[in-house]
Image (cartoon, rainbow, N blue to C red):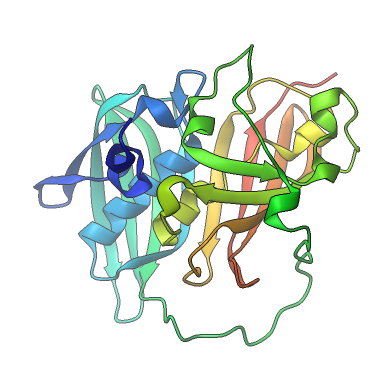
Length: 269
């Protein structure tokens, strides 16, 4: 794959087909197994929302995954529910072979690059483990293929690597760094992917197979600085073969720029 084709902006590009309707192409390179990553799909839905509305940035999105699409052509349908002065709401639908695959409600606005946090409480602390002290997670040599791992650089802190040797810590947390290849900076669209890029936090409890996302909600809080981002992926409760996870993303300057929660299926024990 060429550098240009590998850029996230390229694999999430859309072509307008009519009012509120767009055509896209799901890349086989952004898959887990043979299915496109859920954050990748949400990024495409988020891009459609910014193209359909008057605001440049996604600040909130909630996606429901109906059935997994295949790599290849897709249609994205949008409906502007409200076009406000400071924010707009857009319904987006990803369709393949005339069947609904994923749907999201997206709020868009124009983020101010000069803004600063006013107040916060209850957020986890950012890690101080530097990028170079973390190990790049490779594509698995056997089992489920994860083509996605060849498109990103995902580094885990030494304390998060226990699952690789059968010795998870039992905290339900994975911490590390994430970057796009070729130095491509993160933006509000690629942050929608970043919150779903890490392995599940449940790997720090017990190694499992596919953990399919049922619902994913993301808040984009600020425009990130260039460079890799810090990631905390945390499992919070496993019950009735479901797990809810939270993800926190800090930019290279240490500012929280995105956070998410998701509900996923899981089988353990």
